[in-house]
Image (cartoon, rainbow, N blue to C red; front, side, top):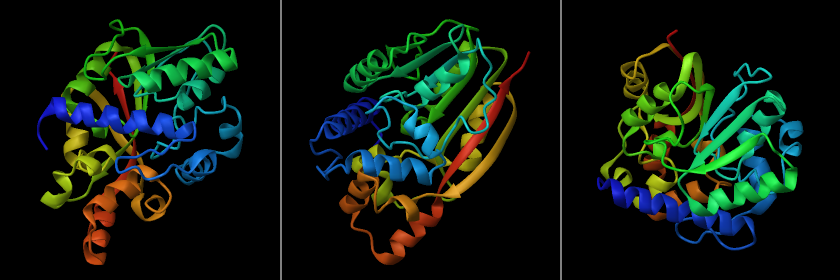
Length: 278
């Protein structure tokens, strides 16, 4: 699956269905049904969010789409400007908004129109006046140069067909000394061709993932310094049974037990930190 336009089209379609599923419809690439708020909370709890965090955001903003908690190691200060790449329904944005305060600002960017509308509705419900959501692709951010203190992203950059450009854009919009903090999916070895060519496996954050060393090298090539993996965990074993997108991806492949074990061991969730030089 190499056509970038087709990749973006399929990802938009899959995540639009997730929004529909959050309102009671079926979602996921093969119409696997969403589990609603309970499933979202189960997933978020497993990847590092506390019950207090999940209870502090507007209903419907946590869709259970993360693979980690990028805010766990991020030092956010009152008055900061925070940018979320692939902000979805706004879960991480609303958590960041609590920390930046009234003098701070949080910007969410997402390419899926349905996600954007959901996030804006959530902001209205919460009265979150320090949060805004912009339609755009993370490879071409609708954000000014040198304007952001912190960039976060949660299980989104792996979906991009041009990750090098994503990191160059992140570097462009960060202020000198600004921080990049992402949770994402990476690989410890190459996946079988059957997985890499699967549309459903791409949308479920598997097929588009890069090898870990290559992923980190892309960040360094974008001129970031102090690039470090803060945490690394195995995610498929814990989430494949409850995450609708992951389940749909694996159902489409019908892997054998040996194939599943090999894939599961290859897929890792990492928290990565990097700094823009002053």
